[in-house]
Length: 242
Image (cartoon, rainbow, N blue to C red; front, top):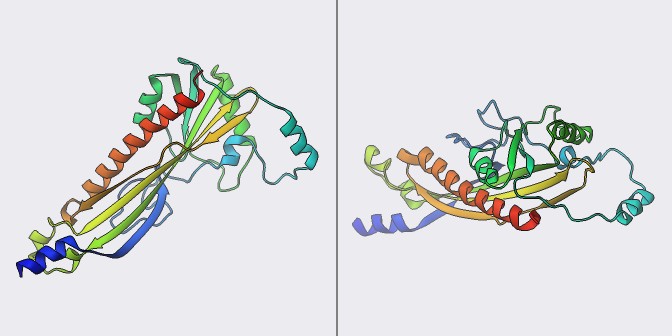
């Protein structure tokens, strides 16, 4: 019996669930994430790239427009140490504290809401509103970041082992793999010129039991976010600071 029990602890079972959600909506939902924000009343979706970059997908673009844009060669965007910067996290009322503090070591950071207020329809005028808000504050650059968290959950064989209930709650019976991807856009307030890039992607795996499922989930996300935000700031410095 002991050999069977040990084998059950070591052999993973089939995939039980996977989900994709925003880093602005990482609360734990025991019933599973439904893709619509679960029970989080503060999460109302994401800004789109069109919102931020000032591109109206509803407008017809001519070949002449493309030629003119291509011929208007611009210098690469850059940042200076200590420069004022408007920081926005898509989907969040304010950027997360860790990202704000890390960015604050290099720039004079002001924050702005990343909660969309206009429904699902993209509106290029929103980008002008962001640029106007930054201009009123004497800020020349806007940095917006989006975060996508991919989660894959697998049951361990211990899910099917009969244990005394109290004991079973403390035995790892589930493994969760999480991957976080960030997308970062830097926008020049005066010209509207922009640049978008994706920094290094991080992932990790954690085991949990019924007793500590929520705590394990939130700790795993927090640790992964810390690595992602640190790498993101390092990438921003390496890419833009001259």
